[in-house]
Image (cartoon, rainbow, N blue to C red):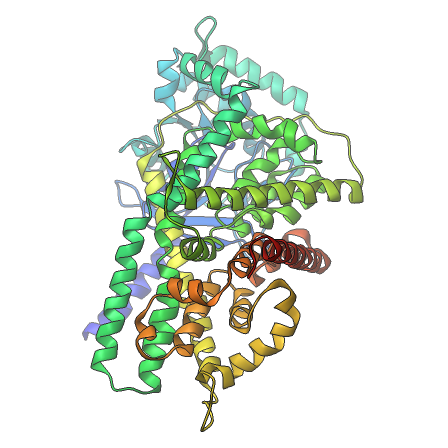
Length: 638
């Protein structure tokens, strides 16, 4: 057998094994450590997609037990009950009950519970048990429970629940071994059809809670006056009505300072590497269209976006740390009263914070909000949060026009400007939420009920996997969408060529130049020239492309030694300060990229909300830029 035939045979065998591998569904309340256990089981052998027909994330992986038995594992969205109140809980219910079209019910359900809070977790366990599927109860965080003096009789709990009970510590190496042994003991798994969902409602919530209390009284022993002393002491400070908001504001401020200062060295390294590689390609190839495509279209375009990867990863690092250590739910409680004034609940904080990374996960995270009106308003304002795709544009303009100096000896002036832009996005989002509150009709404010997990140190494996996933998504985007747009823009900027005796740069006569000059009539009142107008067009598909587009446009519109210069001094010399400030104001409200509008349409089930979002954001962006340009021109000239 040849090498190729052998590889094909091995791939076919692996695919067959995966296809017949039993499916394990990990299910549990939010903050129970379910995803940490999923990461521990699968490592890098996982993939992320969406469930068919919705934008809810589907995480699937593979693993083998110590006995060599292969399994597929699903990390289901967190749920408190199978009596679904949110889209996430609906997906979890439908997957476990085998109601998803084209998707079999799991062969075994692993209920992951927080061993320090069984009273809240066991209700879901009893509901799933009524479906009649093979089950294992994973007592996660048993190490934390023991430190708090909580004693759990796992054998007695197993007898009362009628299922295997294992102890796991998902954040420690080897913390999943007891679960793997339990799965080996259940092998081979026979196919079992789940009972109808009506079986869940056959027992009332009151009776379920009574059964939970009965089991806890038998199997769990709590020390008298049990409290988590450290968590309580920290909460006395971070949830203080005066100190709490101050601490939150300082944390956010430090994050934005770090994004600008820590990323400088790796950004310089990436920029120098791309420039060096471009120079090698330029020296090795004769002058012509192919060299122009490689150097100015591909390397110049994609490289000018790739350089902002360090800033994006630093921003995500802080978000993941705050989430993993348990601070984000506290921030939601702190902001509940403030957000209630504009018609939202504190639960909207986490979707809005997620939108700082990207509007798409922010829009998707809004599905955890039970009230339909609050969910819709959160979706409509989530894109006003300053997403990481705006960061390249902000960083370029700030570096070109704002001097790099310290304020009060410790603060970066550029970081202060960036913080002001982020704050402008937050303020505008609150103002738009207040408008929607009045337009849609104010509903009675619902009390915020949110579980506050105990504080703990962030887990390096979770941080590493989270950052790797974000880097992979960004690099994939650079290598597909952004690269395609850069090549298309290069083509539009290069053809047709300049006529004989031309007095303007070649791009002026190209298709992109014609389009830009046409749009200039619309955008001239806000100070945009035709080069900026060209960059706005691909920015509709992906905002960060605007930087690469500007690089392509100006690299092709310069002559002589200016071709080798960076974009920052070119725009600093070409634009007046009011134009730069106007463009910054535009990107605070910039109309959404197409992928975000598509997600909004799918999450709301209506095209009109996606069109409404695009329309109101364009109007706000134009108005903000017009006022910024006119006022700054009157004050400083330009």
